Amino acid sequence: MTADRQPGVIVTFYSYKGGSGRTMALANIAWILASNGCRVLVVDWDLEAPGLHRYFHPFLVDPELAGSTGVMDMVWDYALATLDTHGDQTAGWHEPYADVLNHTVSLRWDFERGGVLSLLPAGRQDDAYGAKVNSFDWADFYDKRGGGAFVEAMKKSMAAQFDYVLIDSRTGLSDTAGICTVQLPDILVACFTFSTQSITGTAAVAASVRRQRGERDITVWPVPMRVEDSERAKLEASRDLARIHLDYLLKSLDGNARDHYWGEVEVPYTPFYAYEEWLATIGDRPNSRGTILAASERLVGYLTKQKITRQVPLDETERRKLLLQFERKIRTIPEEFTADFFISYAEKDRDWAEWVAFQLEDAGYRVLIQTWDLIPGSNWMIALDHAFRSSRRILAIVSRAYLASPYGQAESQAILRSDPSGATRRIIPVRVEDIPLPGLLSTIVGLDLWGLDEATAREKLLANIGATDTGRAKPAVPPSFPSPSRRKSGSEPSGRGRQMPAPFPSGPREE
Image (tube, rainbow, N blue to C red):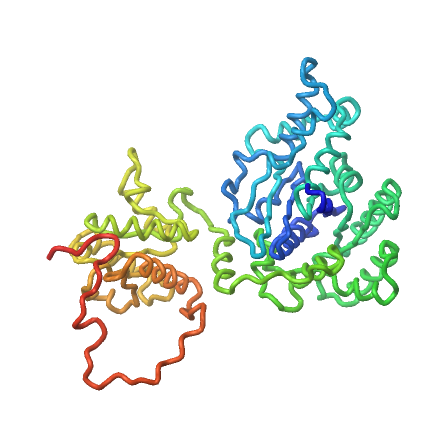
């Protein structure tokens, strides 16, 4: 940490009962902060039921955390080091074990203004993880292993290297919950639902934290979540009960400001987010009232003393593309046979098929292509049948060779029979030669890549593929104003009388 930089703010998100939406709230707020140029670390300290990484899975190199270390690995490594009687016993020897940068993973996303969002997982999610969690003796860790000093060193490491550290705490009362609510945070976000048990339990925990830390040493923001308004009378009674038990936590606000606070920070229940781990920063439209995103932005204002009050919005086209990456795919067949696209092609067009497949995977789509996915030992008939049936859409690389191939004809006819009206846009003809499409293929709007250079071909491919997802091909930037000049009557149609560049990636075809 440089001399002119203040330590980062550590915020713990805690809920007395599960199911409050605590983890989702943390993930949304982390994204909002990072979008505004902050260096943000999110920490999954819900060691018994880790799940924070699920909200960021499209941006992780290791989305299942099969090889990524985290909190449990840190405390285990440190505890084992204390057993080494011949090890380094000098002051500060434990600090390298507490350096969080050795275990964080950064999201693969370029935030504007230089923002960074990194994850410190609960630990490597392998077969040994459960045993590590269940067998770790936290009392021994604190009483005999100097665990308190180690956690303080972790706290110092986090605050020195990030502007905001958001910790997802375990629910209820436990050793690890105490670490997160008492020892680590500068701010405690107490998440609760409007049930009596959740309200009174949250009030008891908040009072205990303030007794142990001191009223002036920690700020507690109580936040109602999963708020439904279908039962109006019950909702108002629950709001009253919450204020009776928790209003005293807002002593820094006057009466009017408290009323304003309670009305602003309620997080609505939205069924859309009940079934999968979605980020509201991507799922909700910017500047829409009554959304989880809007409530998250208002809470960020309180956490940052109104320095940040809005997410820097995503480009709408980019937002829609990201939504597709969050969508859960129902897999009724093996994982290796599920994809966004299956490439159907003739062997003569293998170069084209591989180029198209590479561009799509580079843009975040999952692609199945025979030359990459049919490995030695596979039953090629079964593999291709599964790949064909399980892919959301099929790209047919159309050329003279493809139309002459019995396999190409069979595949295209089978696809057309599965979607005769074209309602699902399941087949997309991609012409790589200037030839007419035969039969029913001629009724489908396709994509022409022949005669283009590589950059233009890639841009056209991705733009058209994006249009199949949104159902519309509106350009991302405004079209140019039409030139006042008029084409002379009888002028040659576009494409005639001029030499087209050779198709990419292959050279001119021999007839």
